[in-house]
Length: 160
Image (cartoon, rainbow, N blue to C red; front, side):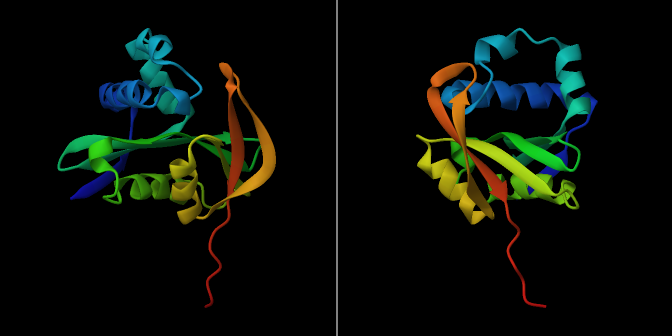
């Protein structure tokens, strides 16, 4: 059974563990590095849980997914730190975790994210959730050989 909860500062160890696992598994998908984040202190991890919203997805009691966001430019938010453990892929846990962030962001003008040009599986995942590419592209700041494309959330139109 899947469960998604918003992490609080006291959840710092679970946040740290899933984040370090994500960085080890998919180093080119993130703006930071495993070695940089391994040096973070408990206070650093706790602070990150107060400066951004972090949702942790669990499957059978084990945290296996993460999705975060932080406010930018007033009414916008940027989706960051999206990852699911390989064992959880295809179970719906990643989509539920990202959806928790989108629910948190309701009322904001835009929710954006950046996806690696060499990561078509991630882009397909985001498209299924309602994201579409914008015209903006750029290099990952820590490694300019990794090109990224911006995507924006466009909620599906429903006929009421």
